[in-house]
Amino acid sequence: MENLFDKQMNKATVFQNKDIISPHYIPQKLPFREKQIDVITQGLSAVIHNSKPNNVFIYGKVGSGKTATVKHVLDHLEEFVKKNNLSSKHCYINCRSHESKYKVLLKALRTFYPEKDFLGYSSSFVYEKLLEYATTKKAHLILVLDEIDKVKDIDELAYSLSRGNDELQGGSITMIGISNNLIFKEKLDPRTKSSLCERELVFNPYNASELMQILSERCVTAFKPNAVTQGAISLASAIAAQESGDARTAVMLMQRAGEIADGEGVDSVTDVHIEKAKASVEEEIIISMISTLPQQQQLVLYAIAQLTLQKRGIRKVSGEIEEGVLYSGEIFETYLDLAKKFGERTITSRWYRQYINELEMYGLIFVTNSGKGIKGQTRLIKLGFDAGKIKAALEKELLKLVN
Image: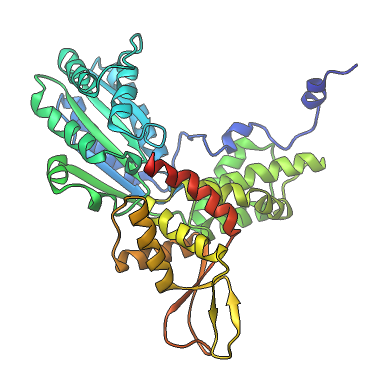
């Protein structure tokens, strides 16, 4: 009897190296991020002169290459440090998984002291141990805090790490904060902000032509020769550009399209497969996108989903009710109530309008100005996807605020 995996081994496939078309793969070359690479490299170059680099805060939407760019630069720094026998180490920390000062410091210590376990020790002990490592090793420590806005006690963490340098007899501690939230710093305490001495860098979303080049370069090594049509690459790029310029979305579409082509037993990925992939990965993309939204934006979207599920709608002058269509003002009022419930500071109406614009850009909602048949002038908003699924996904994220 043939082994099940022998059958898979002998099965025809359009892929040559499927890992390269995975959203988690970091390529050697990062097109259209040369300027950002240069800025980060210059900022960290103080290490090679045995000085402390400035803290760096990086902002940008999901899939704009922030994390990949930072890791790319740090890989080069690590290679340079080893070659020149310098004392510098870095630690990457995903703050979605390590969402408190204590967990961040513990993760850092596990990187710098791999042979020891500090779980159970107090926060102050762990903090002092980190300072001790920098001092005794005369090491310049670089902590990469991805999704830094997810840290609940971020003021305390940022202030402690920045002021900790004043206590060091040698070495230093530098933060590279990465966030999808463009107004993240506005939430920080003024005392914390003044202590950071940071540089800021914004990553703009990719456009369709940039995504097309990124996909084209990946497809050369990810797929077998001539296994992907130009139409497939163009369509995947256009869809991803329309849904906020997210390179990960483009890559996910292409990967799933290849899997669909394999399932059909054909030797070429076409735009038809991209269309099928879009329907297949749409929910996965949406849930992933929702999980990375800033908390305030999650609350705005939650308000829209909640009101939609309550069968709210607008009444036209004719008396007809149009279900699922909401007034911008009622969403804002519901958002204010939700922010209070979850113990979050509220944003102003100006930032609320900005968040609505961004949610529309992501394709999560539809926005139009009221016209004939509607009393007054306002913006009308309708959810773009199943309200129940969006509400359930958001509740998983927002529950973290009260735990």
